[in-house]
Length: 321
Image 1 (cartoon, helix red, strand yellow):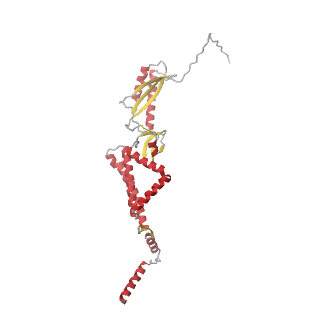
Image 2 (image 1 turned 180 degrees about the vertical axis):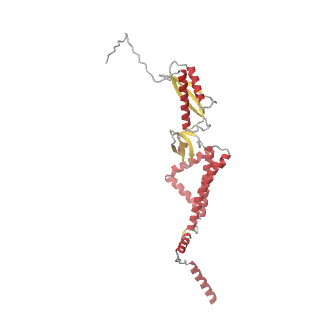
Image 3 (image 1 turned 135 degrees about the horizontal axis):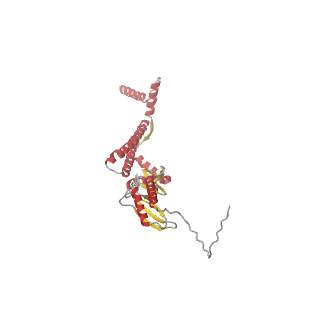
């Protein structure tokens, strides 16, 4: 019995000695290692009876950061290398690339939280917190995010398309999680919230096809040969590169204006940007002016005739200086 008591007491003493922290060494390197070990293994808080250590959170944070970088690299690689081999156009490829990135980010976040020891109940609490935040002022952010997902899936507008919304015209450069970037012809970028593209009327010039119809209006003087004017306008459109021969240009005799006979030349083209469309319209006007000068057709300008009603001839006097 005495032997057993001595053995138990010895074991208890050994456990107590083992549990007691060792003293810090005297040398600098030893002190650094000593305190690093203590901080690394420091227990922050328990979750479901399991301690969450500093080391666990640091590793989970590193996994999250590296995972986000890899998600961006993988999505860009898929968008630039894999999707072009599948012969996807720029718009669908950008949508697929964004969806892949968001899925990878969600997967990385789940893995990082599980590595940190977070149970599934935490995701339920997090979801409730997000819902509460939406109720207290995050509606706009969530609305734009959901609108961005709808734009990526339904694609009423896509990257590379020429659109006009709320007076802003530009080529879609990027469809992000919260907003869409339009690039105007002056080189300016318009940041448009995604919800605006779904809630307001949007003019998409390339929704069903890439061709765009442009019009150039011109007025000629009264007395001009209208048939000759029509021939010259069609010839001017045919001289400009980029004008589609099929369907070909057309000319409308729009109206008898106050000072001119008004014609409208319309044609189809595939400009890559707003500035290309404006440059093409400008080239058509240059050709119209040159052909009219050669043919002697006068481009009218505002005029006003003054009629004097008198029963007898007017007396005119010339007064010297």
